[in-house]
Length: 201
Image (cartoon, rainbow, N blue to C red; front, side, top):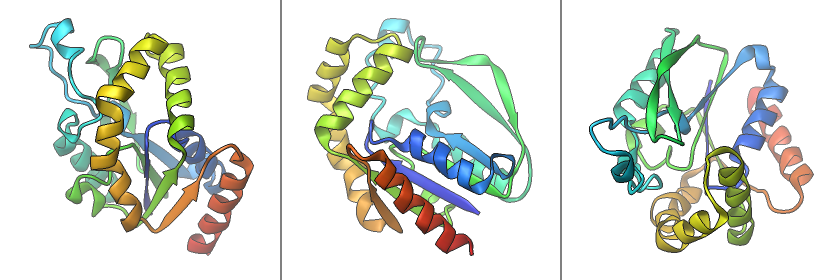
């Protein structure tokens, strides 16, 4: 079973996907993130790579992403890339991922590509207020991606909000379930658990 989890940046997808993996059993579950599938562009300088709009579908290597999901679907292992958000490049290493009973695919743009969207048996859209998403994104990018709060705030103003409205928000309408994840994470977890139990049983 392949389940897609999408929603705006900072909506809490990773937290809820990891919770879903706990419910389904981590030994039975593989999580595949959009974050590993950004295009590898070593021919560009670092400063040029910094100008890439990573919130636009064009930044993703959907061909490889779809190929890997299909391989897993047909019980074949994949060599998943490792992407560095510090250098904006793929690393030399790879991670061998073997198929599991449940495959959870997550990312802000995974529903924007029809061929990838068609691979999912079920789809989940995680929804959160704009203010909370900004705060969460700032906290994550400062802690793990070498950004400053000012850089992240500026990016929201210039591109992220616009990309969200164009490529992310419309997908709420075509998802099997929409889960609100604002201040009460426990409420979102309870709704997700109830839904997962319903589709699995």
